Image (cartoon, rainbow, N blue to C red; front, top):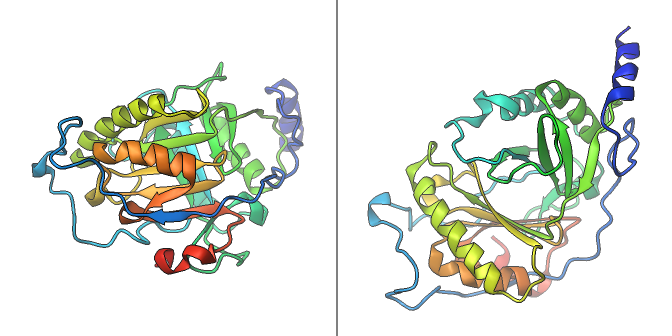
Length: 311
């Protein structure tokens, strides 16, 4: 009876826009070889800077601990397009974030996705181990849903797709589909329209440092993005919930190459935002003093800059 109910449900579910087979795993990512990352030194604006607001000194941002390797490896990033920023302090205790967190815990170490569909540390550690860390990050974002008529849109990275109409009752089946288990529901799937996505931690109910610095960075990044020469509409800046390392605020992750490379930064101030747009988005350069971690799909060490990026 359960099987029959699932079949009937699939008849009335949203059709899969990309015509992906719902009883199989998502196909491996078709990705071109990424350009190598180059480390650069950057000190931001001239001091003192009259152009950008200063990060308040009373926030006590940690300026002493090393940033390198402060992001644990992960395989998938699920971004919920909530359209708001007033999330609870612990998003895993409410709504879709709670449902995803609970269902992921039940499936721990059951991810059967292809090697190409996961993020891997790019410049340190073993990048060829099939049993590499399978951690899944679930993050609320200020991005509004674009396609859902019921429920909510989610962005799935590194697949770089939007899956629409996700409700509490559909999370379990969706994770079956993502993780490669038989699934008898259909999902509406759309290509993500952003070639680059910058996610800035602005989770004020979690930590006042990110709640203060996050909006400052979002504004500075948006202004710098508008002034850049990149194609209009391909870069999106959004506030997100907890990214970890609040002591290093501002924290952000820059997804480039249609989500196939992730560069995590910490201790970012508005004075660095123009450099991040011009260097990281346009020229594959990372600001070494701010880098917390770099992750890629099918990544291989860049031996040309191994000495500077081997942490």
